[in-house]
Amino acid sequence: MSFGQGGPQSQWDPWKPQSQQPWNSGGGDTPDWAALAEASEARKKRRRLLMIGGGALATVAIGAAVAVAVVSANGSGGPSGESASRLPSAADIPSESAGAPSFDPTTAPPPLDPKDFVSNEKKDKAPLSPEILFPGTQLTMAETVYKKGPTADSRTCSSAAQGTLPKVLAANGCTRLMRVTYTRDGVAVTVGVAVFDTEAQALRAKKQADTRSIVRSLSGGGVAPFCTGAVCRSTTNSYGRYAYFTIAGYTSGKDVTERNTEVFASGDDLAEFAFRQIRRRGEAQASAAADE
Image 1 (cartoon, rainbow, N blue to C red):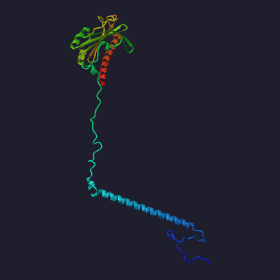
Image 2: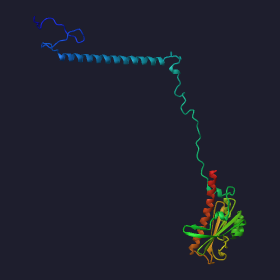
Image 3: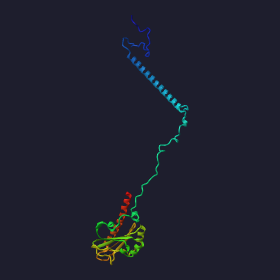
Image 4: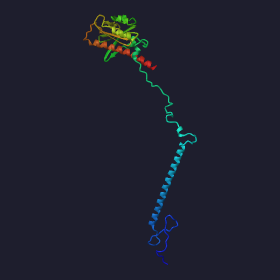
């Protein structure tokens, strides 16, 4: 018996496992591989569509559950029986800094002024003597070296002054006058430091002194008398409660003229040194007070 191409044939459905799969119309037992591939691809597409659809439904379900939960939380029938309107507002919630302690702004105290310690006898308590104020055996100013000579310390200020200076010192309450002499190359300079109780007294003494207000020159200890009758050069100044004076001239007794620059320079050097020593005295006491 031969089988023709007519006759009833069952139609193959890729979704029905019992249906017959078509074979190649060319006859024989060789399967139609192209048809099989198309059927497999169709099944994969359908699975993807089912998965996408299922995921969308799951997402919708989760969203609905969240919405229900939110509505329930905002309702008035919660476990505590309180609604959202009963919650505290942002203004009622204390800030992080509400409980933090507050401090007033502070500033560091100003540094101590050294001049304050040498402007009044109540604060100027450091030891004082000619040897403390003018230490050592010689003095160097710039490149000039001065040899230290005799010193003197008088509690009667007028005895160490001459001209109009004794009256000025007495009128302003001078309590002490210390002197020291320095020499170099035939030039001698006596520095006199007058001590008062207050800065105001020292300033008045400085203002009242004139060209005839002269500290008495100090000789001895190898220093010949000078400025006892010859013309000499003098200076007057003050710092704090101290007034300081210089008199400079030649140990030979020669008069000083404006051309004798070495005498002027020596007097200026010793006046500058006296100022520095008084200022250092104030600085030392200010530093000690700051460390207490």
